[in-house]
Length: 116
Figure 1 (cartoon, rainbow, N blue to C red):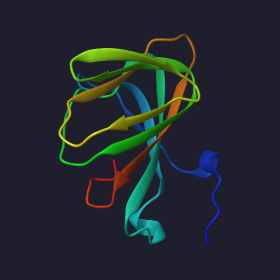
Figure 2 (tube, rainbow, N blue to C red; figure 1 turned 180 degrees about the vertical axis):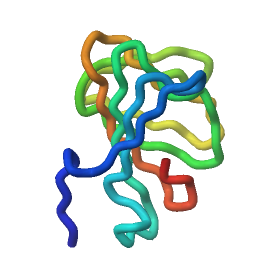
Figure 3 (cartoon, helix red, strand yellow; figure 1 turned 45 degrees about the vertical axis):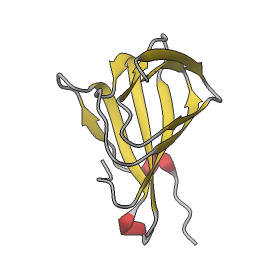
């Protein structure tokens, strides 16, 4: 068993045309011996967003803090802390922070996917 403190994990900053105001890290992944899943944490600044994209694996997302909107099936769906989101494989999707506070969410993906 491993126990980690999220605040001690190095984060990667993303800020370009596709992604704005994002810090992300892998909290549990291949380096930890995880063979089936990867757990990532994203922090999205107010006005920030992930890229709009699709891929052949599903996501499970838990919103820890903040509020935002998730794009899926051509519709923007509002959410706030405590929400759980399921994004099916091959569905175009995007997450954006529509609030005034930091949006933090945990994202689970299968091990076949790129970790970040």
